[in-house]
Image (cartoon, rainbow, N blue to C red):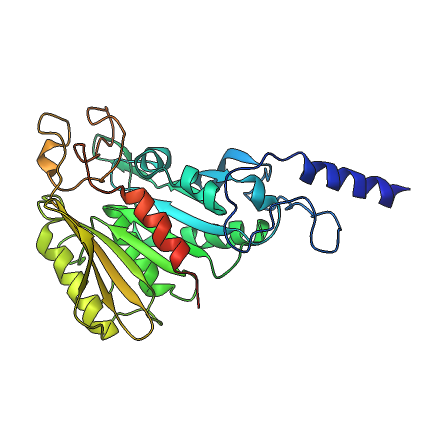
Length: 323
């Protein structure tokens, strides 16, 4: 009797979840598996205290983590995206720029956007330090295990300080991440960062990379970004670039190695000239619709832009699962 009741409850939980867009390749989105048995939902564990469909805020390793759990991810097989903000930002503000929680739900991804330790120095928001890397990897492992994530579909992206962390994570954990999309971050010299492709550091495999570069970026600088780009290309042994798209305002290029790709989205967009981040110039996120005059982390590129960085990221991730 108890077993029959449990099956009815589990079937009801799975069946009542709303459909959220296209669950993506390989994701079981209906309430039953192929043999007709009800899908067993994920089980809370550790800091992941609520596994229901929707938006949740968790605390993992002392860090606030904002996440979106699509209905499709009540069943095994979804992907996972780690989204990392830059200095003075937080998880929700970063996601507002790239909208990866929304885009990920449409493509079958759990998206987690953690907030780092307080930035301090009289500024709002948060930052990241190298010692936070272990917390982030433990977080990825916890969400992977709870939601039974497809290990071939785990990805990372970040902007500015979060971009430096992305470079470091792709270098140190290429066995975990299928692909990576650093943005607005380059060679770590001069920024107190140990990133990748310098001093003998390189990923254990040629992880696919999509890289956002602002030509007039004054926060990180154009040359440090070209430096890490060129070092990555040399490390992969990639051939000459092919122009994939672009116009007078941006260029999308691809370098192809035997087993991987490096793509860049190099743009000439800038922040609004009278906004709080005016001095950052090209240190901005194309396609962001966030308020350019916001009181915190107002880093959208002045619209219109010919491409949307968040969309480019999700498309790249979908195209590059782990081999």
